[in-house]
Every structure is written in structure tokens, then in C-alpha cells.
Image (cartoon, rainbow, N blue to C red; front, top):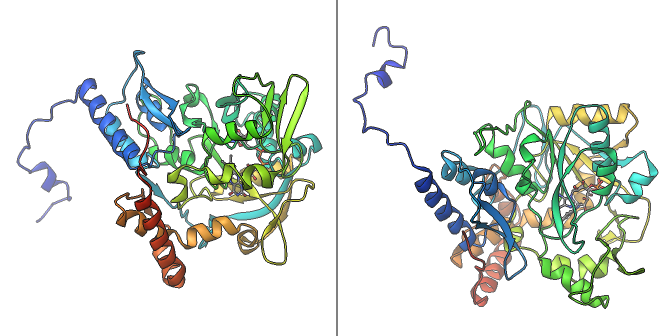
Length: 442
Ligand SMILES: Cc1cc2nc3c(=O)[nH]c(=O)nc-3n(C[C@H](O)[C@H](O)[C@H](O)COP(=O)(O)OP(=O)(O)OC[C@H]3O[C@@H](n4cnc5c(N)ncnc54)[C@H](O)[C@@H]3O)c2cc1C
């Protein structure tokens, strides 16, 4: 058609039905129904994203010890289009693999612009950190340089048995938040999230905030995953253990359910460090193998068992343990000076890591993605057999989230027998479980 700019067809369209604005009550009803669908599939991870879309939602522990959203009586604001935003960014609905232009891609470890062994130059930070204290060193450096004025993270709660979202405002706060917390916490439930210019969270939390992109939030603020948004930091994640697992560890150490606890940490103060409880002048502790290996690692959320993204593909920078391995390829957990791996997943992440090194905040030693994959058997195997697990889960009537760009089918084609076994095992386990779905929704 001469002179057609391509827009003419739209301009010339017969007017459609009048658009009726959705009332907050209806938006809320639709959001609640969408959340319920995720919770009923047992795909809720308790990240807190939905509490940003509707400020009257709160995360609360359910009977199984996992955080789930609940509607409180407090008045709150619901974002226009909250249901749609939820469905496109909730990690129980969808997770995308990020492939920034110019990055290199590893089938199980994801995309990168650079990968290193890394640790904090400051010995105190290195010792307090979960592995090499690299994330804590980056936090301190970002704040010191004025690149960030507030960083969202997680730390020990006022009641030390619990883990809470925190806003890190100083190097001291960063040190206080160092170390992995193997317990439920929703970093995105932090009411101060909108004022944070960096966010450190689990891969699912970082995926959610990246996908939420620049869509408006309930308070009108915006979180954009692009260069203008907060710097997104993450770590490899094998899954969030139930709060009940922490209770079990306390019981093993002889601490009563109602006994006051002064401090509790899971990792750090060494590498990998010991699960340690301090109460009334006495310490009790368990090795990483006893705490993670025997209790915490066996009590993870179902959604985590079918996670395609334990390696934090949506982050700008990701940290992991750079384990030493034995002859059979298994990580060795003897105590030693902490060592993290750092991956720059975006150009912005690359710039930040190299600038932190130049400023003397972290020490870097280049490694390859294959070297990292070698010392991360859990992440490598989980992704390799995930296609099978997801199929098994679907056959048992519990479909997992939608994963895009992970090429799980290509890994399955390369490892057909393992995937078949995973599919059968998952289907059988889910069918045996009387109620794979637990928890209530708003
Ligand atoms: C649940 C969980 C599972 C993990 N699984 C693996 C794994 O399979 N493989 C692996 O290599 N590493 C895993 N890690 C990460 C690992 O324990 C280290 O965090 C990582 O090596 C970075 O160490 P670091 O010393 O640089 O971090 P640190 O300097 O100790 O900083 C850690 C930061 O993470 C934040 N944080 C701690 N716990 C949480 C939490 N639960 N939710 C959100 N933010 C938190 C804190 O705000 C802190 O600032 C896991 C961590 C967690 C919390």
C-alpha cells in the first residue's frame, strides 16, 4: 500500500471494545488467584516478589517451614497490572537464561564475560565470608566508592534462629551480613528494596527482579534489570532448606525449642566453617558435612529441586565456592583459607569486578568455566538431568516453572539414560508423596 508506514494498519483497525480499567479489588483477586496457582503447584520459593506488587502481602512460614505469601489486614497498595507482572516475573512461573551479546556460554555454568577464583583482600572479611568473602568485599567497595548507597541482602534476625532481609548501608553492615544463611528468607520482601542500588540474593530472587524489569511497582517506583537498574549480585544455590532443618540442628546440639539463642551462623568464620550456635555463654557447633550434608541439604524446597538456574544466570556478578576436589571429583570440606569463584555475567558486572580488583578490594586469579564446572558436581548434574526431572514432575501432575533459553533438552539428548532415570524417579517419588503440594495462599 503506497505510503503505508506500517502503523496505518493499526490506525485503520475497527475500534475494539472499550477498555474498562481494572479496579484494585479485582486486580487483588486476580493476583491472589495467580499466587494460589503457584503455591498449589508447590512452585513458590518465598522470594517476596509479590509483596512488592501488593504491599498488603506478607511472607509467613507455613507448617513445613517455608515462606509463603499471606494477605495481612494492613492497608496496602496494589500495582496496576499486578497479576500480569507477577506471572511474567515470579520464579514459580518463569525463569529465563540470560545470554548477553558478546558473552561466552557454558552448557551448565551459563554465560560469562570473565571467571576467576577470588577472595577478599581483607583477611577479616575473607574469614567471615561464606567462602572467600568476595561478595562482602564487593559490598564494602561499592558503598565506599559511592557506587551504591544501600544494598539489599540477608542476615541473622533479631531472633537469631531466623534469617531476615537487611539493607546494608556501611562496611560494618556488610561484614555483619557476611556468610550464607541456609534458611528461608525473602530478600525481595525488604520494604526498603526500592531504595537499594544493588541487590544480593538467591538466583530466583535475582531472576524475578531482572524479569520485573522496568515495570512500575505498587509505589510507582521502577526496578530495571538493565544498566540503569540496581547492580544484581548472586551466588550458586543448591536450594533453600526449611526452617525446620535449623530447628533440628539446634535440637541435635541440645538447645531447647524455647531456649534463647544469642547468635547463630551456618557458614563462614573459616571455609567452609561450622554451623554454630551461641547461647548463654556456650557454643555448640557442627561441621559442614553434618549440618548441610545430613540435615539442611535434605530439607530443601521442592521448587529448588527442579531449579534450572542454581548458577544465577540473571545476575551481573555471581559468586560460588571454588571447592578443592578429591580424586573421585567430590568436593573436600577440610577447613582452609576461603576461596570463592566469581563470574561476570554482564559487561557491567565485568567492569565492577575489575574495578574492585584495581582498588585492592578483591584478589582475582583467572580460571576457566570448565574448571568451575569440575568443582561444582551438584550444579552440573542437576542441570544435566533437569529435563528428565521436569518431565517426571509433569507426568505426576506437578508442572514446574517455564524455563527459557537453558537448552535443557540439548543436555538431555547428550545424557538420555540419566534423564530417563531422573524422569522415572521423580514421577515415582511425587506419586508416592501423599501431598506434594503444601501451604496455603493469600
Ligand atoms: C541457600 C544457599 C545455597 C547455596 N548453595 C551453593 C551451591 O550449591 N554451590 C556453591 O558454590 N555455593 C552455594 N551457596 C553460596 C555459597 O555458600 C557462598 O555464598 C558463595 O560462595 C559466596 O561466598 P562469599 O564468601 O563470596 O559470600 P559472602 O561474602 O559470605 O556474602 C554472602 C552474601 O549472601 C547474602 N546471603 C546469605 N544468605 C542468603 C540467603 N539465604 N538469601 C539471600 N541472600 C543471602 C548475604 O547478604 C551476604 O551478603 C549457597 C548459599 C545459600 C544461601
